[in-house]
Length: 186
View 1 (cartoon, rainbow, N blue to C red):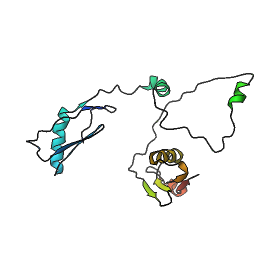
View 2 (tube, one colour; view 1 turned 120 degrees about the horizontal axis):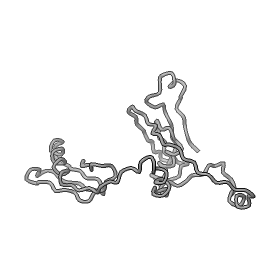
View 3 (cartoon, one colour; view 1 turned 90 degrees about the vertical axis):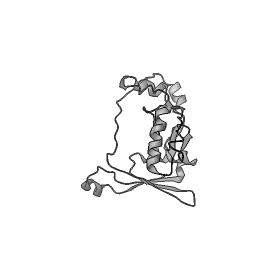
View 4 (cartoon, helix red, strand yellow; view 1 turned 180 degrees about the vertical axis):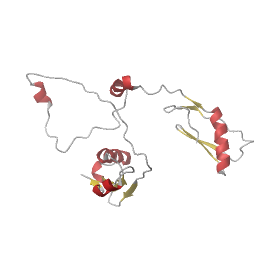
């Protein structure tokens, strides 16, 4: 694989391989994915290093930084690819009631973002069944969101996705005994 120097860069042009040096290697380009296939791993590594030297990528502007993060998320992020899902408990329309309220208050709240991630190796397993149900076994700490994301990826509804969560790396043995596998489904 040939990777850009910075996260978020896009491919401008893939370089060329010296066919005299690598006659059996082939460049593969699919969107921003650039790679080399070759008869041996060592040849693929050498060819990809040579290819990387002539491949051109766009510059990346970087992350917005802590001071501008909330504005960036509100104004520049794509919120259309992950549609809002309403709870089954939500009923009615609050807009008429809000419009007729005598007194209206408005507030904006922001809080710092913190990455909470497992530090050990993890894995997931999917079992797609003949009736269309998909069972996902994972360590995920947000199975409700995972259901929606998997359903969107597969072009189905969350009703067909069942997530089984299991203890994650980092949970101590005494906590594992307290944390049986949980099942999230409609």
